Amino acid sequence: MANAAAIATLVSIAGAERVTIGIGSGFTGRVALGQRPMKWSHVREYVTVLKGLLRGEQAEWEGRVLRMLHPAGYGSSRPIAVPFLIAAAGPKGIAAAHELADGVFAVRVPIAGFRTSVVLTFGTVLEAGEDPGSARALAAAGHAAAVRLHAALERGQLGTVAEGETWAKAYATVPARVRHLALHDQHLIAINERDRPFVNGALLAKQGLALSRAGWDERVALLESQGATEIAYQPAGPDIARELETFAAAVRG
Image 1: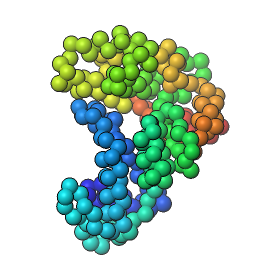
Image 2 (image 1 turned 180 degrees about the vertical axis):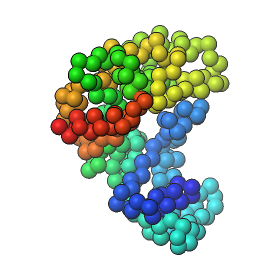
Image 3 (image 1 turned 135 degrees about the vertical axis):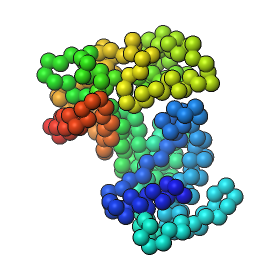
Image 4 (image 1 turned 60 degrees about the vertical axis):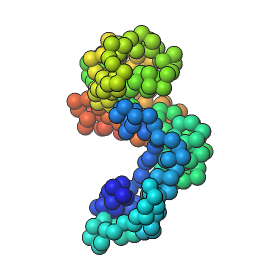
């Protein structure tokens, strides 16, 4: 109900044509809080009920019947029709996207076969002659390299990340009960102190997180050829305006 009300409010402000809803099983919203991702069966039920509420219907949740009771002036009137994207990676998520959504949302590598395929992209545009290990580049893109390490540790996939096993030892002394609090410190914002020894210019270059303008132009062309229809860019660092402006200029050619 909280999400239905938030969507109705947003639509009343921005208009339905400017609103898209993204829902996933939960990485940042679950794992960073010490929880496991939701089961896809639960995600399916959640999306079904949420869409029913937005249509103005009665829906059943946790054994109780509910309906949006918001009167005129408190969010948009029902029915509210907005596109849904499912954040997916594996076959269950992709199947849920085909069944319930208008498109799919993926991280770094697009998922083909959808009319709308959004790919989340991290990184920074290097200045002419700038080293990927510069303080500015690390501040703007280092968080993305760290998040890949965090995800690998949470998913038991350290072998897929350079120096993964060595890096994980930085968290070995943290009690398991609170490890997620240390692991996700500065999550998607900056490099935390435990990660700092492992995140450098070589890692950013290897992961394609610090590229020239031409390099980003090539990357975007590759993503498009792989099925991406849209890019969701997540900037970081002390100068967000600079990151947005330079990235937009690079991908527009």
